[in-house]
Length: 386
Image (tube, rainbow, N blue to C red; front, side, top):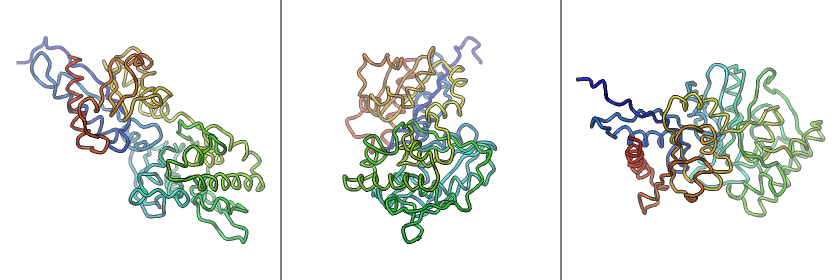
């Protein structure tokens, strides 16, 4: 018999970022939900916690997946990966806005055998995915810039969009970082018509293109560049900017200094050249996914990422979630936390759960173990809610 006095289920919004290198945001949310849903309330039956899953992204890996979660349609296109090997990339489109992602076109995760190639990696595949998206006649294209393998200043992307980069002999150069220093002239032929199309650059990186805080110096090492390669990429990007200025792009130097020009190995600079406007990736995708309305219909918000630390406080996705969750209990789940309990209040966190508390093994290298532990954490969260 139906018990009319049974308490209403607790409504939980599960809104995590990915656990990098281990689980996607959707996998994290799914594992937590499995644990939460298995919990029983006073009735002794499962279902005491109602879960709404909202896997998040901030312009990096999973941005297309996040858009599809919000109702966009997924489209697939084959493009050259970071080293030219064909990869199948996805974009998302809802009839007006297209989301194109660096990570699934020319990202670090697509390097063959994971072998870093800082001079030869190219953003061409991203450009071809953008070109494909433009064929759908969008009013807006969101350029999600996280996770790139290249430091090519975006010449790979621009090559796919009708730009030609020529050396001193007039030969066309490939769109990779190693070619930057040999650019002597630039032609713009067959460029797609971008009139009336809003370009949105989703990135929380605020570095300029050049200098000690520029793309080669700051991000080159994580892409495999040693000191000599960093110097070569820096010189090449300077050559690229100078050649643009000589070709009549009078604001090239100013754009190179723009906060965000150094994102994605200088792809940010190329996007700015095309007229893109930069927005916070975290906030843009939270708006795209209608986070505020979803949060308002829930009793508790659960967020997380691979590591909760100082960078989290500096504005990563969980911090953006925290800013928007005022008035709701907020729980964080992570692979590890370097944030002492006394600092939880800086994000208004009521509790932090970590996989490291549940195992002595390295869960970051074991997706199966990570998922199992997240289900256990989901059960424990439910026990604290009911």
